[in-house]
Picture (cartoon, rainbow, N blue to C red):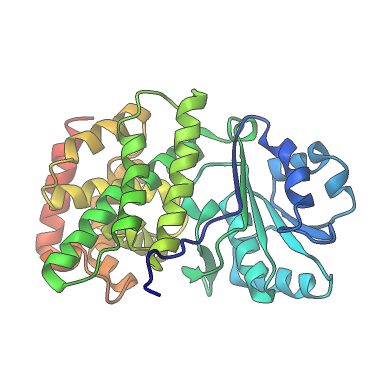
Length: 353
């Protein structure tokens, strides 16, 4: 028979609300997650450890593994420990680092992974990608999509504001990534997945035009939904392209050249604004207004970079994703031209601060 529709991978459960952690017990009792109720828990520093007692008896007998660093070595070590435990599933509780380590480790040994996010820092909480350090540099690795996602807004509200701003930057950067993808379609014949693009654009525009603030439950819910949709968009496309373009190339170059200056979401926010300006994107005004409204970094100095350092990231960005075509590859700026454009960008948008 003809293929009438494709199968779209997705978690069996996505829970986003205040008090969502209370549903974790019922979720783990679901036979699709844990047939015998034997689970392991990977927990990060901070709120992750506070959630375990709050869940109650379901996790009281679980084996707890601490995640102290977001590296491939940490994930391999966790995977080795899990292999001997005979677990049905791994529950990751914490921020992006803990969840990425957990996703990678669970994938090593074929365990289902339940993502319990305590922050809304970036779309890794529901994506088929783990960002981990290896040999002093951060790399992206393909992993399985989480089997379930739980986001409790009570815990999210207690996270540092900078983490929420990073989540905003990551979601709205989708719009720049999609513009790059469509540019690659026009210039190189790349195939754009319409469904994945629609999901990523819906996520980005929901935050771009949202009138609320991170203090509002409705805004936090939209942000959480946007991050989940972004993760699903990458899964549908089979590539990170719906959510990763020139903005992420610049971010990865910053991580390689100037590690520790800022965080992923804040770096891609600056990269998205710069790249959208380079492209003369008609949505640049709305993007700039959104970042200013929430206090998300817009300029290199806002993320601890000089004009010279940001210029280097712009020049080195294409090398972080060989074969990916974005506005950076399209313009192919040399050192002098790149520095001139960065200085012009800083002058223009600095005056609007």
